[in-house]
Amino acid sequence: MAVDEGTVRVDVWIWSVRLVKTRSLATAACRAGHVRVNDERAKPASVVRAGDTVRLRYEGRERIVEVRRVVRKRIGAAVAQECLIDNSPPPPPRESLVPIARRERGAGRPTKRERRELERLLSSRYGVRPR
Image (tube, rainbow, N blue to C red; front, top):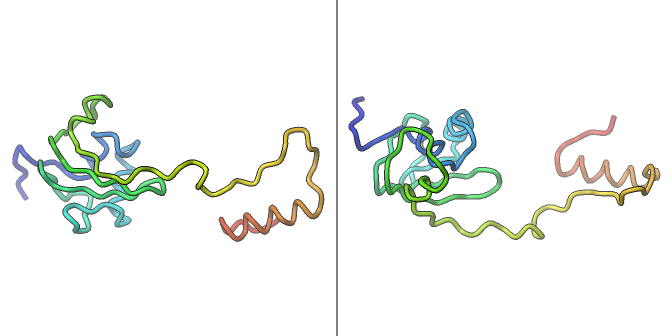
């Protein structure tokens, strides 16, 4: 497939405009089905053009961006914002994120009851099994 000057691979573009940290993460997101171009599932080599809509699920958030300008190399954050129009819903407030089990500093070792509650929480959320 011949690529003209107005197109670029979707994995390269989402990495270039800093939607993901590395190109390999961008490729993995495409392979896992977390990237859609114009509401169609995108493979890493799918092309994007100016005017296309890219949907990306990454780090527990959905980003919906419109391609304004096609870039092939990673660019600065200020310039990257000029290459896209961000139509994403606002990120959830930090308070609404999943609470993390934390102990007060200096509280000492957990009691047997606290340890069991922590293990129950971790096994239900992350599949971590007690040793």
